[in-house]
Length: 188
Image 1 (tube, rainbow, N blue to C red):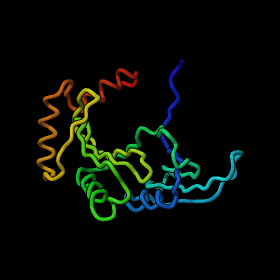
Image 2: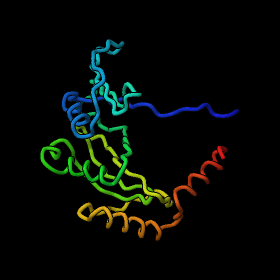
Image 3: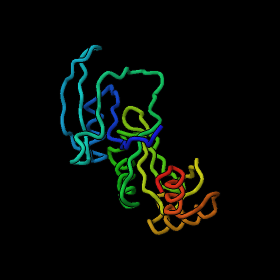
Image 4: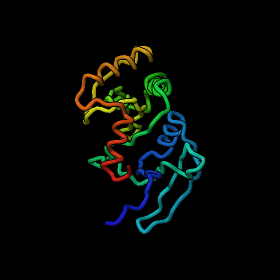
């Protein structure tokens, strides 16, 4: 194949059973704005849609669509991941999920380090797994998932994360990993 065309991820659509509850979760707890909503007639019947975004340049980043069976048997979504800008933002989201009525919308809240990221995993109201994460300035071989303690202050978490990452196979600065991958992908 000649050179690969340029592509960029834009949005994801998920089928839901309780569209109103899912809308509240994604807008209230993750800060998405409803950009549009409506009914679409399809060959398989009518579907109600709610479009959500956190980026004014993207009409939607998430689409909620009615039609998910109450007992689908198996959720084909492994996870949807959302990058945040700082550990402080990740801590704020963790608090929103574990305090007050946030607990009534989510399950399985788990802070975890991947060496290259600090993450909080959570299941949304319908059991879809989300990862909220902040990048670290390091790379380590993957897969890796080690719980970390959000009761520590940010400085202590970063110190632990760095010490732990340095002890793992493949440790290198993220910039070096990016340079290595750029060369491997023929982009250097």
